Length: 89
Length: 412
Image 1 (cartoon, one colour):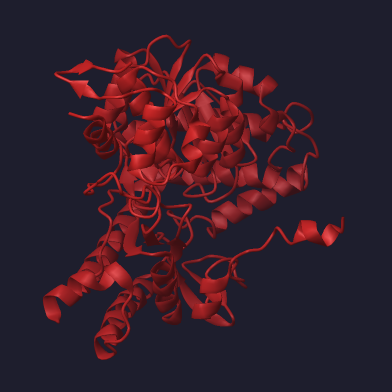
Image 2: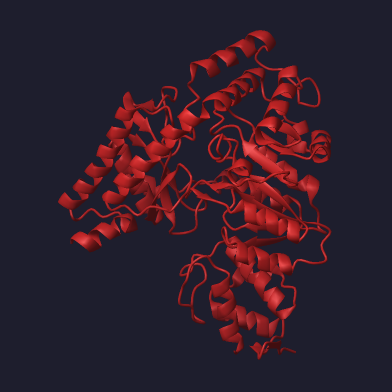
């Protein structure tokens, strides 16, 4: 599972309804996410990668790809989970 | 800098109300609530208030309030910690504790203030609060004051809650916060399972039973009775302005925590105590519930069934709630207000919920049929639902979003 697939999977597991989600999905306009949804996703990402995310980093997040780029850029996560083992720098 | 620039920041967007020529909010009512209310000289069936048991206009309650005024006056003009702790305040605390089956209680001017004041006193940055995604704004605001880590869990989803609890180590205290009845949809929290999980993971459960007290449970004592929870170790809050038909809020639980709040909780000790009339009225409502709950509650469940069945027959899409609340799913902001308007045009008063009270595009119109409604009022409402449907069929150009979609699919 690459990082994109992993993030999409985390989002799907932490929202109330089932949606088809891609890297281009708009979190607010298409999924209707509120602040608690965002908090659930941030918490799940933190647990998954064992990192602490500054919640204000999500202020400018619009689409799923923005999350991936944030994780790759600021948090230096380059790949996701392979065979159940976290693989990131 | 001109001060007018400051005031330009505060603008209420009423564009949808203006477009529809209908504003459901701050509607001026010129009567009391007694099944019906008067608006603009017309009689409306009240499916909007939270007067579940219909006791707000009960003569016995009114008389008890008058007697309290006669004995104590309009107000004690003091906070509970000062002159507000009149004997009737203390008696009501004890009565409420006994009613919900907990050790001790303190009474706030509102449940909003109870929820907002509570968390700052019991939690801090070393703690974790796990909270249901859809809890009331007062709980969210209260939780945020604590400055601790917050982890929401998916609505009423105990599997998600369990996963979060499993990973919640290293905190001084973990709290799990939820409501008994989620009032925009009528769902009831699986609180027995939540309490069990809290016990297993050493977390403290906190429940807001505002729409449960006086409504659910075999004898109307709320969520703890409804779910058969004995020896509750957590914290319980509730509004006294819904089924209890007055105003105010309560926090109940172990003696130690209630005593601590009595001396420290700002929203309690810096607010004027509820006046004697309110305390006397609540005391009478509790007495009535204790002796008449069975017959009163039978009425509200019968009304709920009649309303829900008719709405379903008319093709409306309903939320699947277990409380005596009927919630019509409408979708967008505009479609929700339109639905409330259609009901209003048939002299039915309803409560439309739009964001931020509900998630975006999850607008709904809530109907609560209290026990003070008469059969003829219910009949009027049922006729209105059918008329709204008939009107839609006759005028195909009129469509109110998703609530009408099932019928369209089957009939068009």
